[in-house]
Length: 258
Image (tube, rainbow, N blue to C red; front, side):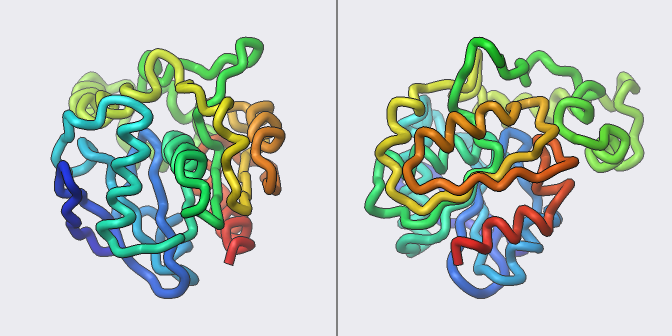
């Protein structure tokens, strides 16, 4: 994947691009995305993938004009326009799924194919979503992965997550991007999306890991109920990071859209 820059009204946006085939825009979660992401490479085998970084992530500039959910939604539509894309397949994971769903609700005639992978955006008092901002690094693998040991190895690349030096580096590196994510995820990841899901016209594939402990599968059924043309693909032995744990299964589900 090649890292590039595109200019929008407010800020230059960094994005990853690669592959060939139907245009596909991937919106990342709160953890960000890198050029080495195996899920992007898998998508790029059959699609022309564009993966914009939310301002404040990676080496991208911050954008104070993005303050709330509507700003995130319109900003991302500005990115799509700046890339010269018309009706790309829109794919979002977690926070990115929340943004993708809002985009499809706000401009329903501009999205015909939508893939939501364990999206945030809804809230159920009986099944509260854990506070990501109060979670320590060493707690993350158990929260995000079905296979905690494998998840820890992926997240740390062999580093000791309880080492104070690692914790300091981790917290500093994430403060910038989580500060941006917090504008729509803190204190709870809910900004009224439930009342707008009915506006989504796109053919939608909803992908969920059966072992998701961050956003439990009960939310999958709430999304399916709210979106008219929605197919739910449940993937066993996979947690919230289902694109990493079960890459081929998620790519297959997305590929149903074309």
